[in-house]
Image 1 (tube, rainbow, N blue to C red):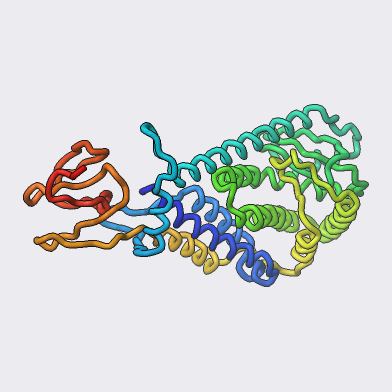
Image 2: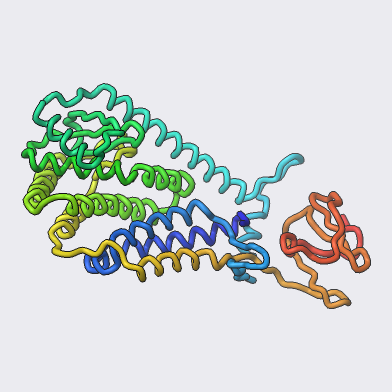
Length: 387
Protein backbone atom coordinates (compact mmCIF):
# COMPACT_ATOMS: atom_id res chain seq x y z
CA UNK A 1 0.00 0.00 0.00
CA UNK A 2 1.22 3.48 -0.82
CA UNK A 3 -0.18 6.68 0.70
CA UNK A 4 0.46 9.93 -1.18
CA UNK A 5 -1.33 13.15 -2.13
CA UNK A 6 -2.11 11.50 -5.48
CA UNK A 7 -3.70 8.45 -3.87
CA UNK A 8 -5.70 10.71 -1.54
CA UNK A 9 -7.00 12.66 -4.54
CA UNK A 10 -7.98 9.39 -6.26
CA UNK A 11 -9.76 8.28 -3.07
CA UNK A 12 -11.61 11.60 -2.94
CA UNK A 13 -12.88 11.17 -6.50
CA UNK A 14 -13.85 7.56 -5.76
CA UNK A 15 -15.91 8.25 -2.63
CA UNK A 16 -17.65 11.20 -4.30
CA UNK A 17 -18.74 8.99 -7.21
CA UNK A 18 -19.68 6.06 -4.94
CA UNK A 19 -21.60 8.36 -2.58
CA UNK A 20 -23.60 9.85 -5.44
CA UNK A 21 -24.48 6.30 -6.59
CA UNK A 22 -25.62 5.43 -3.05
CA UNK A 23 -27.61 8.65 -2.76
CA UNK A 24 -29.39 8.05 -6.07
CA UNK A 25 -30.24 4.45 -5.11
CA UNK A 26 -31.83 5.59 -1.86
CA UNK A 27 -33.97 8.08 -3.77
CA UNK A 28 -35.70 5.22 -5.60
CA UNK A 29 -37.85 2.77 -3.62
CA UNK A 30 -37.90 0.29 -6.51
CA UNK A 31 -34.10 0.13 -6.60
CA UNK A 32 -33.97 -0.50 -2.85
CA UNK A 33 -36.41 -3.39 -3.22
CA UNK A 34 -34.69 -4.75 -6.33
CA UNK A 35 -31.11 -4.64 -5.03
CA UNK A 36 -31.76 -5.47 -1.40
CA UNK A 37 -31.28 -3.35 1.71
CA UNK A 38 -28.47 -5.48 3.14
CA UNK A 39 -26.46 -5.09 -0.07
CA UNK A 40 -26.91 -1.32 0.02
CA UNK A 41 -25.86 -1.25 3.66
CA UNK A 42 -22.66 -3.15 2.83
CA UNK A 43 -22.09 -0.68 -0.02
CA UNK A 44 -22.25 2.20 2.48
CA UNK A 45 -19.68 0.43 4.68
CA UNK A 46 -17.40 -0.01 1.66
CA UNK A 47 -17.66 3.71 0.90
CA UNK A 48 -16.55 4.53 4.44
CA UNK A 49 -13.72 2.02 4.14
CA UNK A 50 -12.59 3.55 0.83
CA UNK A 51 -12.55 7.01 2.37
CA UNK A 52 -10.49 5.79 5.33
CA UNK A 53 -8.03 3.94 3.03
CA UNK A 54 -6.75 6.61 0.60
CA UNK A 55 -3.96 4.38 -0.71
CA UNK A 56 -2.70 2.72 -3.86
CA UNK A 57 -2.88 -1.06 -3.91
CA UNK A 58 0.33 -2.30 -5.50
CA UNK A 59 1.70 -5.67 -4.45
CA UNK A 60 4.53 -7.10 -6.55
CA UNK A 61 4.04 -8.75 -8.98
CA UNK A 62 0.31 -7.89 -8.79
CA UNK A 63 -0.46 -4.20 -9.25
CA UNK A 64 -4.10 -3.18 -9.06
CA UNK A 65 -3.58 0.56 -9.25
CA UNK A 66 -2.70 2.07 -12.62
CA UNK A 67 -1.25 5.55 -12.96
CA UNK A 68 -2.93 8.10 -15.23
CA UNK A 69 -0.43 10.83 -16.07
CA UNK A 70 -1.37 14.47 -16.50
CA UNK A 71 1.06 16.48 -18.62
CA UNK A 72 -0.62 19.91 -18.47
CA UNK A 73 -3.28 20.46 -15.80
CA UNK A 74 -1.60 18.68 -12.87
CA UNK A 75 1.93 20.00 -13.53
CA UNK A 76 0.62 23.57 -13.82
CA UNK A 77 -1.45 23.19 -10.66
CA UNK A 78 1.45 21.56 -8.81
CA UNK A 79 3.81 24.36 -9.84
CA UNK A 80 1.36 26.91 -8.43
CA UNK A 81 1.00 25.03 -5.15
CA UNK A 82 4.78 24.62 -4.71
CA UNK A 83 5.77 28.14 -5.75
CA UNK A 84 6.77 30.22 -2.67
CA UNK A 85 4.81 33.43 -2.16
CA UNK A 86 6.81 34.48 0.91
CA UNK A 87 10.45 33.72 1.54
CA UNK A 88 12.92 34.52 4.31
CA UNK A 89 16.33 33.19 5.18
CA UNK A 90 14.76 30.41 7.24
CA UNK A 91 11.43 29.58 5.61
CA UNK A 92 9.63 29.65 2.29
CA UNK A 93 5.83 29.63 2.45
CA UNK A 94 3.96 27.95 -0.38
CA UNK A 95 0.20 27.62 -1.08
CA UNK A 96 0.35 23.90 -0.32
CA UNK A 97 1.71 24.63 3.18
CA UNK A 98 -1.18 27.03 3.80
CA UNK A 99 -3.72 24.47 2.56
CA UNK A 100 -2.23 21.76 4.79
CA UNK A 101 -2.43 24.18 7.72
CA UNK A 102 -6.09 25.00 7.03
CA UNK A 103 -6.94 21.31 6.60
CA UNK A 104 -5.24 20.21 9.83
CA UNK A 105 -6.68 23.14 11.78
CA UNK A 106 -10.17 22.36 10.53
CA UNK A 107 -9.77 18.66 11.37
CA UNK A 108 -8.64 19.45 14.92
CA UNK A 109 -11.57 21.85 15.36
CA UNK A 110 -14.14 19.36 14.02
CA UNK A 111 -12.66 16.59 16.17
CA UNK A 112 -12.69 18.84 19.23
CA UNK A 113 -16.30 19.90 18.61
CA UNK A 114 -17.42 16.28 18.26
CA UNK A 115 -15.66 15.24 21.47
CA UNK A 116 -17.16 18.25 23.28
CA UNK A 117 -20.66 17.42 22.03
CA UNK A 118 -20.25 13.79 22.98
CA UNK A 119 -19.24 14.81 26.51
CA UNK A 120 -22.17 17.24 26.65
CA UNK A 121 -24.48 14.48 25.49
CA UNK A 122 -23.24 12.17 28.25
CA UNK A 123 -23.53 14.99 30.77
CA UNK A 124 -27.14 15.70 29.81
CA UNK A 125 -27.93 11.97 29.89
CA UNK A 126 -26.53 11.77 33.43
CA UNK A 127 -28.86 14.60 34.56
CA UNK A 128 -32.06 13.32 32.94
CA UNK A 129 -34.45 11.25 35.09
CA UNK A 130 -34.96 7.59 34.34
CA UNK A 131 -38.43 6.43 33.36
CA UNK A 132 -40.36 5.43 36.48
CA UNK A 133 -43.72 4.55 34.96
CA UNK A 134 -44.09 0.80 35.67
CA UNK A 135 -46.14 0.23 32.51
CA UNK A 136 -43.45 1.80 30.32
CA UNK A 137 -40.73 -0.12 32.18
CA UNK A 138 -42.62 -3.38 31.69
CA UNK A 139 -43.04 -2.75 27.95
CA UNK A 140 -39.33 -1.95 27.66
CA UNK A 141 -38.39 -5.12 29.55
CA UNK A 142 -40.53 -7.19 27.18
CA UNK A 143 -38.89 -5.59 24.13
CA UNK A 144 -35.39 -6.06 25.56
CA UNK A 145 -36.00 -9.75 26.23
CA UNK A 146 -37.11 -10.12 22.62
CA UNK A 147 -33.97 -8.53 21.13
CA UNK A 148 -31.47 -9.46 23.88
CA UNK A 149 -32.84 -12.73 25.31
CA UNK A 150 -29.73 -13.33 27.44
CA UNK A 151 -29.96 -9.87 29.00
CA UNK A 152 -26.23 -9.26 28.52
CA UNK A 153 -26.63 -5.51 27.81
CA UNK A 154 -27.79 -3.08 30.47
CA UNK A 155 -29.74 -0.06 29.24
CA UNK A 156 -30.77 3.23 30.78
CA UNK A 157 -34.20 4.47 29.73
CA UNK A 158 -34.51 8.24 30.07
CA UNK A 159 -37.50 10.54 29.71
CA UNK A 160 -36.89 13.89 27.99
CA UNK A 161 -38.90 16.69 26.47
CA UNK A 162 -36.10 18.07 24.32
CA UNK A 163 -36.04 15.24 21.79
CA UNK A 164 -38.41 15.17 18.80
CA UNK A 165 -37.92 11.40 18.24
CA UNK A 166 -36.67 8.40 20.23
CA UNK A 167 -32.86 8.15 20.17
CA UNK A 168 -30.02 5.83 21.16
CA UNK A 169 -26.63 6.85 22.56
CA UNK A 170 -23.63 4.54 22.86
CA UNK A 171 -23.11 0.81 22.52
CA UNK A 172 -21.13 -0.33 25.59
CA UNK A 173 -23.42 1.43 28.09
CA UNK A 174 -26.33 2.40 25.83
CA UNK A 175 -28.90 5.03 26.73
CA UNK A 176 -32.35 5.28 25.15
CA UNK A 177 -34.07 8.67 25.13
CA UNK A 178 -37.86 8.62 25.09
CA UNK A 179 -39.59 11.85 23.99
CA UNK A 180 -42.87 13.15 25.38
CA UNK A 181 -45.11 11.38 22.88
CA UNK A 182 -48.26 9.59 23.99
CA UNK A 183 -47.63 6.17 22.44
CA UNK A 184 -49.93 3.24 23.11
CA UNK A 185 -48.38 0.15 24.68
CA UNK A 186 -48.08 -1.66 21.32
CA UNK A 187 -46.64 1.44 19.65
CA UNK A 188 -44.18 1.89 22.50
CA UNK A 189 -43.19 -1.77 22.29
CA UNK A 190 -42.32 -1.38 18.59
CA UNK A 191 -40.49 1.90 19.26
CA UNK A 192 -38.33 0.13 21.85
CA UNK A 193 -37.74 -2.76 19.46
CA UNK A 194 -36.50 -0.31 16.81
CA UNK A 195 -33.99 1.34 19.16
CA UNK A 196 -32.81 -1.98 20.57
CA UNK A 197 -32.23 -3.30 17.04
CA UNK A 198 -29.98 -0.29 16.42
CA UNK A 199 -27.91 -1.44 19.39
CA UNK A 200 -28.03 -5.11 18.39
CA UNK A 201 -26.70 -4.31 14.91
CA UNK A 202 -24.05 -1.97 16.34
CA UNK A 203 -25.14 0.93 14.16
CA UNK A 204 -23.38 3.27 16.56
CA UNK A 205 -20.00 1.90 15.40
CA UNK A 206 -20.83 2.81 11.81
CA UNK A 207 -21.76 6.28 13.06
CA UNK A 208 -18.30 6.57 14.63
CA UNK A 209 -16.62 5.55 11.35
CA UNK A 210 -18.68 8.18 9.55
CA UNK A 211 -17.63 10.81 12.10
CA UNK A 212 -13.99 9.81 11.66
CA UNK A 213 -14.27 10.31 7.89
CA UNK A 214 -15.97 13.68 8.46
CA UNK A 215 -13.06 14.74 10.70
CA UNK A 216 -10.66 13.98 7.83
CA UNK A 217 -12.83 15.44 5.04
CA UNK A 218 -14.81 18.13 6.88
CA UNK A 219 -14.60 20.32 3.79
CA UNK A 220 -16.24 17.80 1.42
CA UNK A 221 -19.86 18.90 0.70
CA UNK A 222 -20.77 15.52 -0.85
CA UNK A 223 -20.11 13.81 2.48
CA UNK A 224 -22.01 16.44 4.45
CA UNK A 225 -25.10 16.71 2.26
CA UNK A 226 -25.28 13.24 0.69
CA UNK A 227 -23.38 10.56 2.65
CA UNK A 228 -24.47 11.55 6.18
CA UNK A 229 -28.23 11.59 5.45
CA UNK A 230 -27.91 8.47 3.27
CA UNK A 231 -26.27 6.44 6.06
CA UNK A 232 -28.74 7.72 8.64
CA UNK A 233 -31.64 6.68 6.41
CA UNK A 234 -30.04 3.29 5.73
CA UNK A 235 -29.74 2.62 9.45
CA UNK A 236 -33.37 3.53 10.03
CA UNK A 237 -34.52 1.31 7.16
CA UNK A 238 -32.26 -1.50 8.38
CA UNK A 239 -33.79 -1.37 11.87
CA UNK A 240 -37.29 -1.20 10.37
CA UNK A 241 -36.57 -4.21 8.15
CA UNK A 242 -35.53 -6.33 11.13
CA UNK A 243 -38.49 -5.10 13.16
CA UNK A 244 -41.12 -6.13 10.60
CA UNK A 245 -39.53 -9.61 10.43
CA UNK A 246 -39.94 -10.24 14.16
CA UNK A 247 -43.36 -8.65 14.74
CA UNK A 248 -46.92 -9.65 13.92
CA UNK A 249 -49.17 -7.86 11.46
CA UNK A 250 -51.01 -6.05 14.25
CA UNK A 251 -47.72 -4.89 15.80
CA UNK A 252 -46.55 -3.76 12.38
CA UNK A 253 -49.68 -1.64 12.03
CA UNK A 254 -49.16 -0.27 15.53
CA UNK A 255 -45.61 0.70 14.59
CA UNK A 256 -46.89 2.57 11.53
CA UNK A 257 -49.33 4.44 13.77
CA UNK A 258 -46.47 5.23 16.13
CA UNK A 259 -44.41 6.57 13.24
CA UNK A 260 -47.36 8.79 12.36
CA UNK A 261 -47.41 10.17 15.89
CA UNK A 262 -43.67 10.78 15.71
CA UNK A 263 -44.02 12.58 12.37
CA UNK A 264 -46.71 14.89 13.75
CA UNK A 265 -44.59 15.59 16.82
CA UNK A 266 -41.56 16.38 14.62
CA UNK A 267 -43.63 18.86 12.60
CA UNK A 268 -44.73 20.60 15.80
CA UNK A 269 -41.31 20.67 17.42
CA UNK A 270 -39.30 21.45 14.27
CA UNK A 271 -35.95 21.68 16.11
CA UNK A 272 -33.33 19.06 16.84
CA UNK A 273 -30.67 19.44 19.56
CA UNK A 274 -27.35 20.10 17.85
CA UNK A 275 -25.31 18.77 20.76
CA UNK A 276 -26.83 15.34 20.24
CA UNK A 277 -25.09 14.54 16.96
CA UNK A 278 -23.41 11.52 18.55
CA UNK A 279 -26.73 9.80 19.12
CA UNK A 280 -28.60 7.63 16.68
CA UNK A 281 -31.21 10.38 16.47
CA UNK A 282 -33.61 10.15 13.58
CA UNK A 283 -33.37 13.82 12.64
CA UNK A 284 -34.98 13.12 9.32
CA UNK A 285 -37.03 15.20 6.98
CA UNK A 286 -40.62 14.33 6.25
CA UNK A 287 -39.70 12.66 2.92
CA UNK A 288 -37.32 10.26 4.69
CA UNK A 289 -39.95 9.24 7.24
CA UNK A 290 -42.52 8.76 4.48
CA UNK A 291 -40.05 6.47 2.71
CA UNK A 292 -39.91 4.37 5.87
CA UNK A 293 -43.73 4.19 5.78
CA UNK A 294 -43.63 2.86 2.23
CA UNK A 295 -40.89 0.36 3.05
CA UNK A 296 -42.76 -1.06 6.06
CA UNK A 297 -46.04 -1.29 4.15
CA UNK A 298 -44.45 -3.07 1.17
CA UNK A 299 -45.74 -6.62 0.83
CA UNK A 300 -42.40 -8.20 -0.01
CA UNK A 301 -38.98 -6.56 0.22
CA UNK A 302 -35.77 -8.24 -0.86
CA UNK A 303 -33.03 -8.06 1.76
CA UNK A 304 -30.07 -9.02 -0.43
CA UNK A 305 -29.07 -10.21 -3.87
CA UNK A 306 -25.88 -11.94 -4.97
CA UNK A 307 -25.56 -9.77 -8.06
CA UNK A 308 -26.00 -6.59 -6.00
CA UNK A 309 -23.29 -7.68 -3.58
CA UNK A 310 -20.97 -8.56 -6.47
CA UNK A 311 -21.68 -5.24 -8.17
CA UNK A 312 -20.87 -3.16 -5.10
CA UNK A 313 -17.70 -5.10 -4.33
CA UNK A 314 -16.65 -4.65 -7.96
CA UNK A 315 -17.22 -0.88 -7.70
CA UNK A 316 -15.17 -0.87 -4.50
CA UNK A 317 -12.27 -2.71 -6.16
CA UNK A 318 -12.47 -0.51 -9.27
CA UNK A 319 -12.13 2.57 -7.05
CA UNK A 320 -8.53 1.47 -6.36
CA UNK A 321 -7.59 1.00 -10.01
CA UNK A 322 -6.60 4.57 -10.83
CA UNK A 323 -4.41 7.32 -9.51
CA UNK A 324 -3.53 10.62 -11.19
CA UNK A 325 0.05 11.86 -11.20
CA UNK A 326 1.98 14.71 -12.76
CA UNK A 327 4.17 14.04 -15.77
CA UNK A 328 6.58 16.70 -17.02
CA UNK A 329 8.08 17.03 -20.46
CA UNK A 330 11.05 14.74 -20.83
CA UNK A 331 14.30 14.78 -22.71
CA UNK A 332 16.69 11.92 -23.44
CA UNK A 333 20.42 11.70 -22.97
CA UNK A 334 22.88 10.23 -25.49
CA UNK A 335 22.04 6.71 -24.31
CA UNK A 336 18.31 7.20 -24.88
CA UNK A 337 17.42 7.36 -21.18
CA UNK A 338 14.75 9.86 -20.18
CA UNK A 339 15.87 12.92 -18.22
CA UNK A 340 12.98 13.93 -15.97
CA UNK A 341 12.37 17.50 -14.88
CA UNK A 342 10.66 18.46 -11.64
CA UNK A 343 10.12 21.82 -9.92
CA UNK A 344 11.07 20.49 -6.48
CA UNK A 345 14.51 21.54 -5.21
CA UNK A 346 17.09 19.47 -3.41
CA UNK A 347 16.29 16.02 -4.87
CA UNK A 348 18.13 14.86 -7.99
CA UNK A 349 20.16 12.10 -9.65
CA UNK A 350 23.75 12.39 -10.89
CA UNK A 351 24.88 10.01 -13.61
CA UNK A 352 27.83 7.91 -12.47
CA UNK A 353 28.81 5.94 -15.56
CA UNK A 354 26.02 3.42 -15.99
CA UNK A 355 24.87 4.04 -12.40
CA UNK A 356 22.86 6.83 -10.77
CA UNK A 357 23.69 8.61 -7.52
CA UNK A 358 20.58 9.76 -5.66
CA UNK A 359 20.75 13.02 -3.68
CA UNK A 360 17.97 14.11 -1.32
CA UNK A 361 18.02 17.61 0.15
CA UNK A 362 21.41 17.99 -1.57
CA UNK A 363 22.81 15.05 0.44
CA UNK A 364 24.03 11.80 -1.14
CA UNK A 365 21.79 8.82 -0.31
CA UNK A 366 22.87 5.80 -2.39
CA UNK A 367 23.76 4.58 -5.88
CA UNK A 368 21.44 2.44 -8.01
CA UNK A 369 21.64 0.87 -11.45
CA UNK A 370 18.25 2.23 -12.52
CA UNK A 371 15.79 5.01 -11.83
CA UNK A 372 13.49 3.89 -9.03
CA UNK A 373 9.73 4.35 -9.49
CA UNK A 374 9.53 6.25 -6.21
CA UNK A 375 11.91 8.91 -7.56
CA UNK A 376 11.06 8.72 -11.25
CA UNK A 377 10.21 12.44 -11.51
CA UNK A 378 13.37 13.92 -10.00
CA UNK A 379 15.85 15.55 -12.44
CA UNK A 380 19.01 13.80 -13.66
CA UNK A 381 22.32 15.61 -14.13
CA UNK A 382 25.52 14.53 -15.85
CA UNK A 383 27.66 16.18 -13.18
CA UNK A 384 27.39 17.88 -9.80
CA UNK A 385 24.34 20.17 -9.76
CA UNK A 386 25.28 23.72 -10.54
CA UNK A 387 24.28 26.41 -8.06
